[in-house]
Image (cartoon, rainbow, N blue to C red; front, side, top):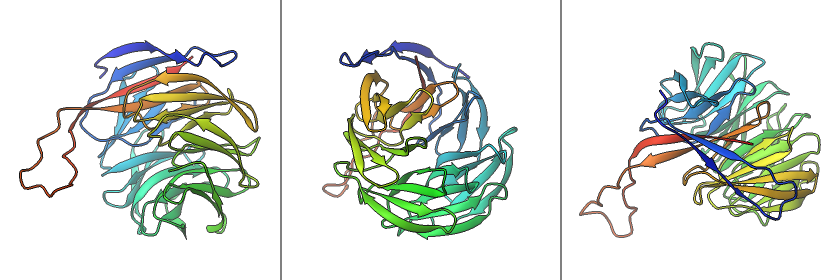
Length: 340
């Protein structure tokens, strides 16, 4: 049920040529669950939003909740295998992947993943596998057959903090490692790591997207994101953005990169002028906590979510010195659609 709606205008970068005007529509979607990744199903206006123990399915044009996928403990994200008609969720709470029918949202089954630490998820349309990036110890990438949901391979990564992943058209999978400040390259056919590329000046790489035509990787980093040549591993461009970046988005038709910053509550919108040339055309004001984003390359809308929190409880009287204060409880969330 739609509870509230507002429309916001946005801040434009005055130096950008041919700058576009962006609009942010906001809907209050309630619920007390947490949130991590967002997935936009291309062309359908359906947006899958992780909410701790379940997935909300939201109409991106109206903010209406149109479906729900239950029993996904500590869920992080959703992967869509359109060719196979299946969707998949990463459930860190019980180390399973839920497979569901895209048409009906009905559950097909669950697959146990022994690696643990389930987090990121993506579909590799070349191998027709779902790829998981897991905060296990050490970190792993796990491949599942997108038709059967069965685990077909696992590769050990260089550290325990793999984040965003992307795939090219030749059977390679690229995975950011947040703690090592690198991209690892995986041969998806043999599930083997074949290279590791340093990303300086990037720190804490998380979100990742790819332009397959130009063979450029867009890496979301704290304050300074980078563009990497996917053939050589060379950093070819730097992009200034806000702090608190997690998953970023790319529209290959409009050649726009969306880089969210959860701490500042902004999205940096960057136009790809050429393979190695990038212009910031806008800074969109969203809400603090909106750290991940999804882009629908068909409708050209981007989506973000921010949690709404109540007052934080008082620290326990016997809490150890230097311990973290208790976190404020989630009392709702806002769903946002960015358009122009």
